[in-house]
Picture 1 (spheres, rainbow, N blue to C red):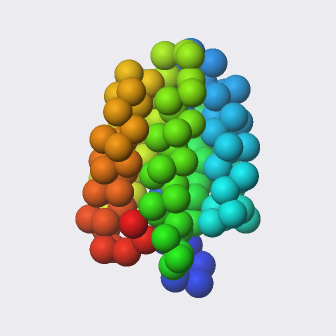
Picture 2 (tube, helix red, strand yellow):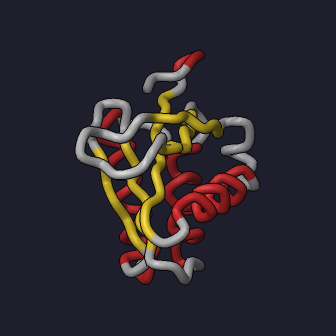
Length: 128
């Protein structure tokens, strides 16, 4: 998932109640962040064998310099804390590592920030 111009791309996927609407809400929320504006796009992926359903949308965020990873982690924690539905967001690094955070864990936003930042740091040691 390495992007152009040295950017690293991480994938965000939402699952749970109303996942499609929640995915759009997350995209709109992140797009409002100055550091992330213009860095978001959808990638359609086929489900893995054994998964039910059709094509899944993954929100891809291109992280470059300037602390975009830290902004992503904080903004994701804040967005999750405001959700009422029982949903989870999986953040996947280009190397295939992932962390899954949910509404219940968002009760401690700093824990969410630490987990996502740790994932991003493990890949490149930057942006967080």
